[in-house]
Length: 345
Image: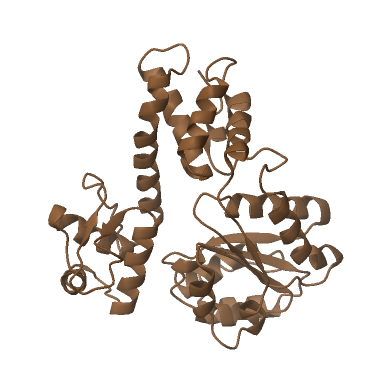
């Protein structure tokens, strides 16, 4: 039915970025000094999951690189150590030579000594950052600008050390869920590029757009699931039944992808909650069992942060707002197991 599965990834966007023209203009304005060889101001890119924060930022930064030669790197914050973040940044810095086997101090020296033009660092999933001291490191490096992508602005800014004034006071580019019209256009672009004509019709695309409440991630995966279900069932085109069944398939795939993207400590917390079954587990018991099962247990505040992100990802749920010590937490899909990783030695 289709020939290009990459069109069903979130990174594939129509060239005109439907529904994100204003955010593209705002972010372009913030980063414009870098096109003239000056460091840009560090900034925030804030919005709900699936609203196009990362894909829009990537689109713009690639344009800046192609048109003006501005180098950039994207690093995932979730569960990464200070050394891992600096290592990944150094690997993409155009003026940092061989860095394999270097420790944190050596990496910092290499980055500090690099005589560089503006260099843009995307700190994605910023709310998963566990080492705020790395922000002090990056703030001290000449010509480096940070683009911090997260979900909650107040929570994100609160985690920034007071000394990193440029970031704390940086401008914010806000993203809202896509409109239904924009979602239809996004889905149509994928259908036009990756599917044979007539495989999916306009009414089916609009039904998907209506269902997914402005989340490109959910919309793209629903379209993919509808096509795959049609193939599995031997249909020559997507049927309305395939579309109706696609949404749960898409949710399950997204949950699996999101859980896999998290670090080991998140997986331990998730496993403890999942093993508690449908009756759920109270926060105090969760903390105790987590400490028993983790090879490198973190404190209560860290566990609360893991729990909050797991809920934001739709992997766990709770009674009420989950703030009471008597509230219980449970796994949304008790068939989904955590891909527990071996500890890094």
